[in-house]
Image (cartoon, rainbow, N blue to C red; front, top):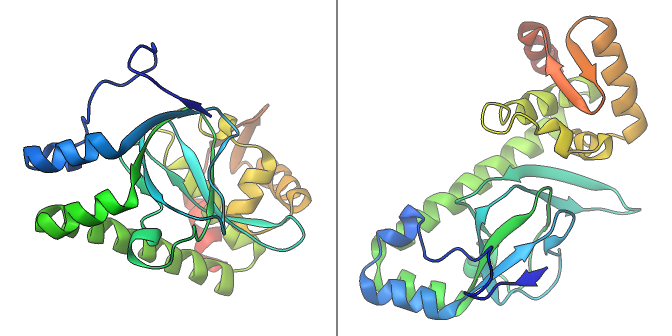
Length: 231
């Protein structure tokens, strides 16, 4: 992790995201005065489950994984975090600790915005508060969908759904599978790495996917979607 100053080449000069540009000038200045720009290197934790949260993160550039940590070094990956998304909104509306961890899978440019500043802006700007509530609700929907998948689908169905989810990022990030380890993919399905490797080989043998080193190409979407539904 590296704090960026205005003199650094990596520094992003202003608040370009629509959610900030829609704010009145006084609110923009409040954000600008309360933010720190940070470069997280690939593999760095943006948040750590259970640690104190005095700020909210806004991802400007890069990709990260949001996950919950379990026992015996087992994780469950919840989603891939895109540029333009907030991380740590739960800490604004609920308790003062991070409910989950997040890790950079590419170098990530992030604004750390003090939580008290976000709270003040919500109080003075209803439109901004409504947009945050929408984002918060979307994250809750994602959590319920993950809970449904993990609870009611078998291992094959969970793994097929994980592959389809990750593949949905390929249009914008063609090398998304290459950014992930086999353990990362397994953690999206809540299965062991060994099981994920076996399933990948089985799906390749059946002609559903093609494996090229770390990259994965889906050849038969219908079969994979059917496997996901039946699971």
